[in-house]
View 1 (tube, one colour):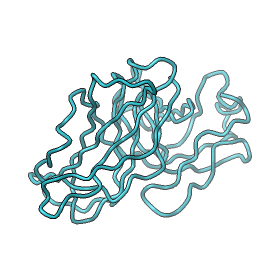
View 2 (cartoon, helix red, strand yellow; view 1 turned 120 degrees about the horizontal axis):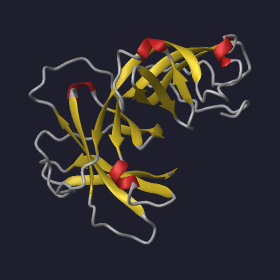
View 3 (tube, one colour; view 1 turned 180 degrees about the vertical axis):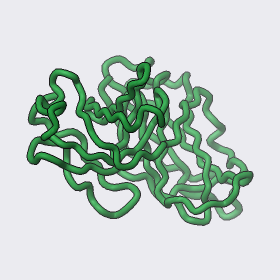
View 4 (tube, helix red, strand yellow; view 1 turned 90 degrees about the vertical axis):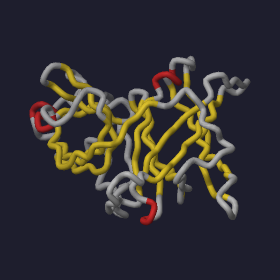
Length: 237
């Protein structure tokens, strides 16, 4: 880690407040909120990788997570602690206190494209796809907005493995259906999911580029889909 480098700062996803600070050496102790991360666990030691390659460690999380888990964390970083005196240059990570750890639903991308011309049973539209996102250890964190009456939801991301193009932008399709078998529950309107894009990354060389297509609306009798797409995401590998 570079001594004066700031790591990723993300707007709060569960509230309208902003993150208190960005990781830097401007103060002795800072509080951070709503950071997406991926757990890497070896033996009894667990670390959380954040966007930009920064890594945090806390003994508080070792028994609560598994290797590869995706999470959202709030944490405090105290530069006054001896273990943080070198800004993580030697060990490669910061030692922090975890204030909150929220599991994030994680699933593999499907290498079988669903029929994009047919409406799925109990399929729903998205209110919007938020600008904030993260790509960490081949996990893509996606944040979406939904109406209260649609929850709870099931998310599925798929692509056609046979697609090709000169621009090497992969077209991914996000389908959202209501979990009718689940007990209705009060959930945040903002949903966050992590998709494992390892298989897709293996197809790329120096960078991965893709676009997410999602259902914007249906026709009057809900038999036809109107698709829309977001921006092209590009991540170095």
